[in-house]
Image (cartoon, rainbow, N blue to C red; front, top):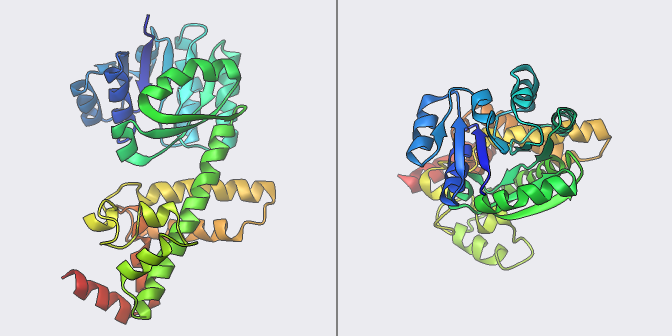
Length: 309
């Protein structure tokens, strides 16, 4: 018999993920604090519950997709989600949170008689909608084995990274690579502009040479070379800059706590924090190329504005 799944957090990521579970034949009972998010999920076949606790009461699996670790811990403990669930319920937290918070949530779930994994995702809203997410999973083998079929309904790959918190560790390491590489690619394009090099020429070289990377070949930060990139939609996210700033902030916290010499990671966190608080608040993270261009001088910025007009 297919498990009953409670899904708490039906936003831009959680909503499509819950819808894909419904498409796979599962009964999904969902809750979100935003009525519009609930309405969209209901339209996709999710049953609405009046609270997270009510959603979890008869569930075999509880999936959470929440903004921060404090929300997960508060929901699990203070709001009674763990206590409301039946013994042996599997808790799958897909939020991107601090490693220490992920481990604390796992310990609380196990102490309450449940199984638990942390399973943050990579792939953004487009991946959530298409069911092509990658899950980075932390937890024991039994919990991962039970979670894997459900993750397969929402994504294309699930990697068991290790014990509790390992999924979060993999996520922040991956996104530190992504943030640093997007800044490097953006700086290279702005340098190319200053030298009279066309975007297409630089792309044609770098995409087939040693500069090739995901930030260039899939999420290219300038319009033209990669038609599907957010740069061709005026940087409509995609993966929003504030989310990248959040993930890099988590990575920076871990860097400092571990005494790791990660100068580029720390600097990327600073740059994305400033970008997300300013002009990039509603943009894809690749929009940082515009901030780099603006800081590089008025002539470069004016030239680009003239090309778009």
